[in-house]
Length: 155
Image (cartoon, rainbow, N blue to C red; front, side, top):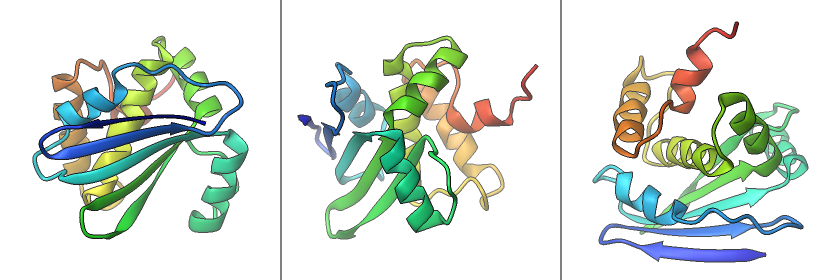
């Protein structure tokens, strides 16, 4: 299991990889801490897991039997925002389809997960999360965000 951590003045990001092959995602923790909105204060964990593991989590907590790309689990103690869990295989496939690197896809997914941890919900907020995601991903140099990409019809 690979592990790295970065602490900024307001957000501490810890990355872990629970796969057979260690992921190399240099700068992800620093990037997420740097683009995070001001209200994202405390600690957050970003874990990369197998598609099978994320499918099991999705089935248990959302009652959906498929490997989604990212899930967020809010923290239950002061100062701990929560866990962001990313399916490595799904992220690789999405990166390929989007025409960018795994590192860029990891940023898209980590940002999306972080926004959920601080209270955004794109399924109910009438575009508030989509606007925040668009603003932050532009600030962080990403072409598209997850919400924006899933709303774009595929040819």
